[in-house]
Structure formats: C-alpha cells, structure tokens
Length: 531
Image (cartoon, rainbow, N blue to C red; front, side):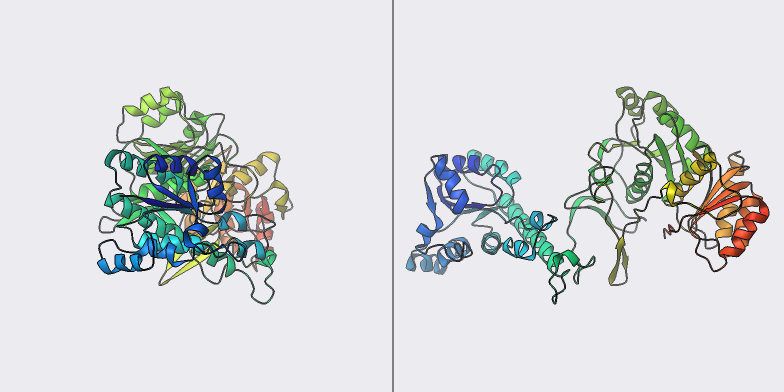
C-alpha cells in the first residue's frame, strides 16, 4: 500500500501526470523546490519537505532531504517491530514511494564552456542518498529514477492497488545502476583533472580511473566457440548509426561471430560517401566496391572473392532494392545490413527465413563533429590479462591533399582515385594487409599474415582464382615496406601504383626501386595497423 510519495526531480518529464495519478489514488505528496512548485501550481496538495521535517532548507539547497524524517521514512523495515516503534517514538512517517532523478552532471560537463565550479555544483548529494535508501529497502519502497518507469507502476497500482515485488525489485536494481552510472561519470571527469592546476580545459584524455558502464542487449547462445558463453552489451548512449541501434527485420538469432563480423562490415561500408557494398568473412573484407547503386556495388564486390563470400556478411550504405536483393538471394549469406530496403526487396528475402536482415538508420549520422555524432567509437578497448588497453579509435580518413608523391612518375587522376579507394579498404583489413584495387572495386585482398610478402601473394592468388587481372592495379599497404622485396612482389603481380605510409629507414631504397620499376608511389604519413 502506497500512502506517501516523495517526488524531487531535476528532469520533470511526466512527473506532473504521475503526481496527479498518485493523488487520485489517495497518495500523500511530499516534494521539494521546483518540483513542489510545479505540483502546487497545478492545484495538487503538496507538502514541502521543509514543512515535513520541521527543518528549513539551508546551504543553498544542499541540505534539505538529508534528515532522519526522510531517511528514517525510507529505510524503516515495515516487518520489524523495533523499526516501526522507533518511527513512532520519533514521529517519523513512512515514505512508500520515492521519485528522484539527479542533477544533470553528465549534461553539464558535456558543455564546452563548463567550469570546474559548474561541474562540482551539479554533483547531487541528497538525491543519490535518498535513492540508495529507498533501493536498499525495496520490499517496502518503490523507487523510480526514470520517467519510463512511471506508466508500469501506475498500471499496477490501478489494477492491483499495489506494486508487485518483482517490479519493486526491478526498480531497485535500476536505481543502483543509475547511481553507479552517475558516480562513474563523476569519477571519470574529476580524475582527468590535474590536481595542481585544476584546469578543466587541459583535462587528460585518459583519466586516472577508467569507469565504463554498459547495458546488456541480449545473451548469446555461445561465444566464438560453442564452449564459450557470451552476451552483447551497448553503451549507455549509443552513437547514431551504430550496430547496436540496428533493427532485425527477419532471420535467426545473431551469434557472437555474426555480430563481430557485422560490425566490421558496417564500419567499413559506412565510411564511403557513394553507394558501396562490403562483404566480410572472418572479420576481413573479402570484397569491397562502389557503384551507381546497390546492385552494381554488390556485383563488383562479389567478383573479388566469390568463394570467401559464401556464408559471409553483406553490408550496403544505401537502399537495398529488388535488383540487389535478387542478386544477393542467389548466394548463401548469414547477415545482410542496409539503412533501408524497398518492400520488394524484403519480400524477396522473406523466402529465406534464416537470413538475418538488419536495418540501421543513418539519417542522424553527421559528416562532421565528434566521433559520436559521426556514428563512430571515440575509443577502442582491448582486454589483456587483468587489464585493458585503451586507445583512440582509428578514425583517420585520408584527404587527397595529404598524399605525398615520392616517385619520378606521378599517379594519374584515375590512379589517385584507385589509390584512395584501396587505402580506405586497407584500413579495415587485418594486418599485415595488402589490397589490390581498380575501377572502384577490390581485385585481391591479403590479410592477417605475419609477412607482408605472404599477404601480397595471397591477394594475388585470390585474384587469380576469381579470374581478375591485377595488371594496372593500385595497391595499398597498411604499413610501410621495410625492404624493396615487398614492393617488387606487388609490381610483379601487375601493380602500377602504390600507396603506403612511408617512414621506413629504407624509404630511399624503396623509392628508388619504384623509380627503377617505373611505377608511381605516394606516401600517406599514417599507418592503419589492425591487429
């Protein structure tokens, strides 16, 4: 039975409607500050906390709910006579529902002009204290920390005149989770500040303590292998156009490997500004191409390596129409991803019930701004023994003006286009990576070898197996050629222009070899290791 509710919220979304429903149910309303004013202005009978406690709000509002009449009312166990006797002795009423959301610390520190003083002032004290008290005493107190919880609780009150233990426990867990997220945000922010200067403009990129909060999306049947368990988690605030925002339109449950490969495909394909298709197998692109539409892009991408494409992941960055769907449906595909589908395309895939068809909205993704706004990770994390390696994500995208021609022969305009395309693909291929390209498509991909020479050879073998010629191709290497032998190999297979980072002690030797063989070579000044 809920007799008394305390409402004190920073974000007032839905709180008036909640209070009106509680009042109609006969619940006494306690409140503070702006929330109390909102309720009173709407004609609701509301008791200010200061009146309830008999102690005035003080210290600019910092002390108002930190009082035994509040925390006693929240923490007292109704099933313990000694607790109830103590309440009676001290004239403390029970509080059966707590509705609290916290000062907007995260939103405050996200502002470019936020000062340390602003940040500190937006650290809530009384709110988290009340939430912890109510959540600890979950059997007797309903604690609501999110407006999305209001409807479910009100429905139970209307239907059963009470809130179920299951719902109360769920709300308690959500409350502790919210406190953990809040404290983590404060810790991350403050531990990035030099205690000597306290200059927030010079906050460290990596704080002294790394706190991560993730929300489980789903349990998975198993991990990479059937003897491993697995689950999928997402960021608290997923970036627009990221894989975890996908809607699965049809097909079997996604596996661990499906998700990992789908992410590799999606991150690669959405990096292109023109219609593109990426086919992934075991986290590596086995075919990438651009075209006038989804069908042309897919047809070209599939040509690169039809064998590896079998049972792969296919991603488009443009609408998948009926023509593309017809072509894709002729192959065995595990997962298909696109930002949108025509009804005709979906009808074609409906005949293949097991194909996992995913839709990811790209409309909110921006071309500029933060990594998050562009739908990208700001950081990459790798688990090691009892630790984490944390780095900024590889979000570097090469501009034409960044290219440095180092050979006597300069690349033609078409070669420059092919080189830039090859470089963009190489960014998403496991190191050591060698990628042959031409006319907006991959011709051969060599990935993940200990020797760059072997990657080059594998790429040529793949091209030959697919019936593709490497004559006149452009080649990208994700890291420099340490010796001329790697360069000689790709030229022997038909390359006429090369893009590579440069930076080797033997750059002069490699450049001289390129001039000797009569090819064009450009340096990027950056590498794209992907281990």
